[in-house]
Length: 376
Ligand SMILES: [Zn+2]
Image (tube, rainbow, N blue to C red; front, side, top):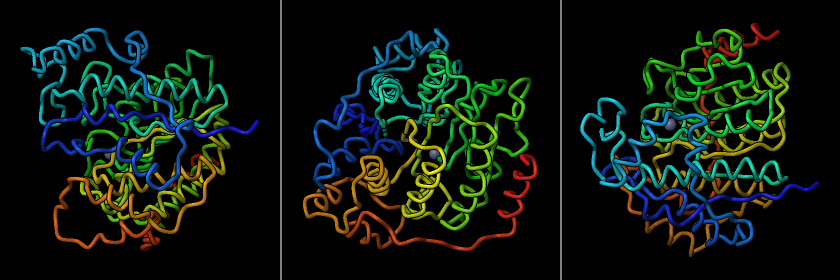
């Protein structure tokens, strides 16, 4: 059977934005959709309109009082008394806005649609998904509803017994890891900036390998600052086949945060989207098609270009050499200011970056070797 790619998205996200000055205020899903259309890289029938999740599905992961709190804060667009302390709602990180409840509900519903589409034989990509920091009872790290957690539970409910979750975001997936820490039916693999210098600081260390029957089913690969394509691909190439062989997953969910790209001002990695795409290719070569989610990513143009590449791959399209004038116009109309003066003109010229290979440091080789020695 020839699987067909589906982009689960909606232009409704345009009106479901975070508060002003929040890093997630930027256009993301709508920009990707507009870019793909302007480049002639997507047909209408390849787009599946996002549907909000049913509350009963949220309860697969989240606690009821927290869901109620989100609904109450959404209704008044305010922080109810005591909710900041109790649920971490209304902080600078996790502000009340239309994105908080309605946006998150749509993103989570889309990830659930992704599972259903996958099981029907499609290749789903939900760029709004991958909100991996949220906890069952509180908001965390810009995330309110943990859609990966919800769909991993949904897959368990469907009877899957060996589900692999791979998280490429620059930040460790603390909300997902903690929930499945004692679970052997979900293997959580995260490659990220070391928590010694990056959010979430308290989770994401190599030593966190799971507990109880989940022991050995959690693998963290914390990396130093300055990782480029060469080091990142060395890690992916070294570890994905190993985990795949040992765990033999029946299905996998892949979180594709674009904050590993060099342009992203909230992280310290230096990847090009060439490296990002290559990492995706390596994973796909080993594991076949999976359920693809977005993730972090705070540079709207870098993000839209990188996810457009993912879309080209799964929809079996060649990557175009140039960016069309219409697409250039769309990208250049995005309101976004770089933190510092840098020449990013290459972003308007083509979708695919030149590689940013960088070095291959001893500590990265040692880390991969350390993991390998535990598996062999
Ligand atoms: Zn991130």
